[in-house]
Length: 249
Image: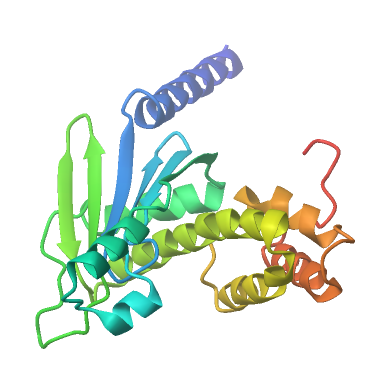
């Protein structure tokens, strides 16, 4: 009788625990959103939305000035201004939907918890800081909505979240450039993969699995430079990803 009673207690606790977990993970959807804007950056604006069910949405728009435009800005000629505006608006918006890695999902929401879901002012105000773009972090759930905007913050959790989201942007934006290179400018692949490799070595890429199929294709593509193939392979290995996909992938 005692054994049966203990079994029933354990079963009841397990059911209660499962119900609690389900309530926190599915019945109460929450998102952490990162927004970035800086006219001189490329892309000049992007948004990353991480859902607590693991889905991620990325949207970017590049209306930033190119390097020659920056050097020549401001331009008094109306024709030159029109040309700059048309050039800046010529880039198509980039949209990407993907599944977050377990590590990213855990980190994003645990760091948001550490900041009380961004309820507060996290801008560094002790002295002037060089401009690096306006960033906004937003936490949204059925019962909470908080946000904070900043240029730079000394809060460690905010810094880590900023690095995570910037790393996601670096990864997603690189995919479009590499796809363009492979189709039209294969000789540019070595330089662009070299830039991506440096970001990888510096820990400035996130969610490399999203672009892993393209990197694998490039690592096996005999029509591109061998050094470019090696760079693609190194980026995969640095991220702990197989160079040759598994049969399940």
